Image (cartoon, rainbow, N blue to C red):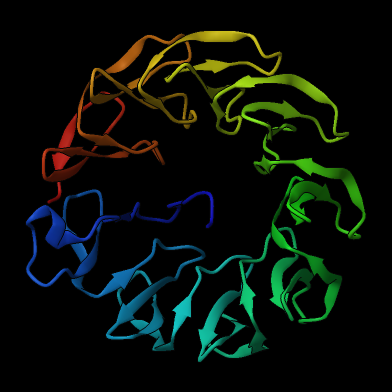
Length: 316
């Protein structure tokens, strides 16, 4: 359930995030990787795959997961029953029915002894033992003892946890700093976190103060100073004062990245500026956020990518 992807390297590797057979591009449903010259740099060979993080990508062959580098070389042989992406030098992997953590050589640094596990973030990782969630450091020692019904990654120094059906936030000492009182929450982003109270959504600050009262039918996190919000089945954008700065008019809307946001209007996807004006007119059947100046889009059954001028290059 990780929240975002990042492609940052000497070359921009675009990961094909839908199964190739579903696009009519490859019998057997194999996965591969391309670069920005529209060329497969790692052949369509894998039964499943993830984006690259920290120079490695988790790939599945048959029933087992391993890791490759950006040349396609297998650096950790397929041997795991499940695998997360590397973060902060470690990756959570499933061996049998238990989770542990490996380093980039494939060596277990935290033995597989956990009921569930997620990635490290800000030095700590949420893990589950004996039915409860806590947090471990990179030695495997508990920094916060298992006591929560659910727990998620730290972001901006705080992590959301679930206690008796309600959500709140803890700091890295395990102290509850925002009481578990919400029906749902988002991670903190740019100092604010979305919260659910009853059927409405709003935002709180790190003191737990409501800074944007719950009034929306749905919200997504702040990014680049704005957050998508839903009112009466249409989406717009607010600033951190809660003021609507882009009027609700879209069927779907996602956060801004690199000054542009993907939105769906009249059943097609395009990209808007922070003024609400279209930078790229709606004409796509699917659209993803920009990363390093490129965004993946779908036209019918074809997948390609565009630059910020809208120039399209088909990849499948």
